Length: 249
Image (tube, rainbow, N blue to C red; front, side):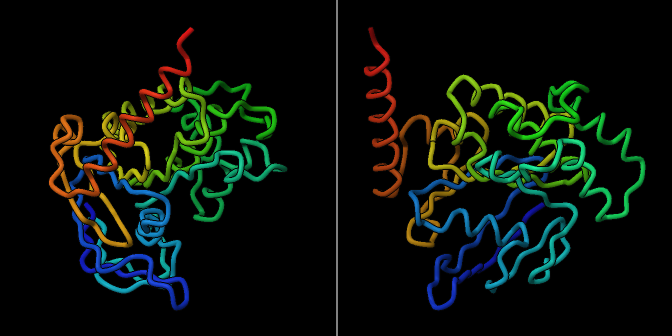
């Protein structure tokens, strides 16, 4: 479904993605991990068609992606559900806008179906972002991404801004949607536990390059070949131990 070969991305003179290659099969959930500044979010924006300064080869379902052109087959869910929704636009308008831009009819039925698919009720349709919880806002963002019936969903830290209990609900929703619709996911996250929950493979990025790819079973077992990957796994385990200790009575 996704084939990237030698992707390089810049912000002016600064090169942030350096000759990255990877492939994602149809229906697969593929994770990209790494610390802040590793280039993972920029890489995702290149695949989404939201970053113009890139070179290399990129195809979606066998069709080459042209620079600056966003294929309808690819949609993105951003980290901050409040920041990605217009504060003065209702849920109805947020979902109707992509249909209007792409001249797709049947908005009434499509919006109702999109809301139901993410577990929101008709009463949420005419509310504004500030009237929704963080989890509900992210559900709206997912519904907006799905309303054009994409084949690929790009997820940029989709649970990072949510409480732990809500994170689990959103991950379960994403799992269900992928299975029901045969979607292909690319998930960017610094949280290895989130990647292990949703993905079957993970690429680890450092300083703009992929240093290792491994199966999620190897990630869970700590079977890393590259020292940087091993350090990320150790840091993740240490963070979870500290979090558990802080919550203990």
